[in-house]
Image 1 (tube, rainbow, N blue to C red):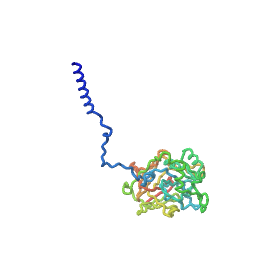
Image 2 (cartoon, one colour):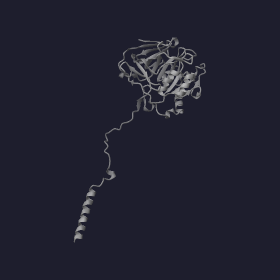
Image 3 (cartoon, one colour):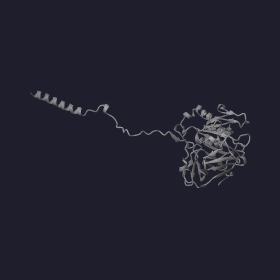
Length: 348
């Protein structure tokens, strides 16, 4: 009798417990899910971005290429002028290299020109700017100290005297003023050296804005004159219709031999430096472009006075107004002139 009662009790406990366990069973995987609001629109990556070098809006895949920095001659003899490809450069640097003669370094990051040159030799001061961008540096030989520095700094180097496949000689011009390349060759050289497979460029970008978002400027500036001397005097005249400065050299409008068009700049940067020092005893000057100093910036027909700063060889040169804020630049190309104390400079 007792055994029968216990057996019946165990049976009912088992039944009741089993029912509770059944009621607490985990839902099947087919019933597990996350409610997704069908009205939520997924965020898409932007199709265009400002190009790091000049702020121009381009396809996202083209916004941060390895720049190509090219030494371009500006001698007033030897049939050098007009040069080719300067109008397509995102940046052009100008400074005195020796004997009062200026030379350019054009920086390309996606624009195209079938001919670029005449390509000339490396110079020390320009290596400070090359280092800012970790660009591929295209030149034809160089001064002894510059070539040593190229190796010492481990720069991305393409010397036309050693890698001639990316350059050619034009028979219509006399040597050494007849070495040319093209932007296609520049970009091919960068690919062939596998520099595009390394970490993408990470130099600081300048502060680029659209025309209607420019900060207030100090004063009007329609004409700029930089007295490098005679045939090397640089001038800019503002074209209000196109919002660009038209460039002249030695009192003559400067054109691009490829396009036949007047060379223009959206931004003109006059970077004042202290006296340089002669190297190699051949009149070649190295200018102090690391540090800080006065800068005059021109865009949209106006002038802003400020300070340039470059902390180290590898750091980017930045431009600040008198209040310490970074100066707004227009999207587009810029010409940068390095001006020591003995060079005259004026604007109006």
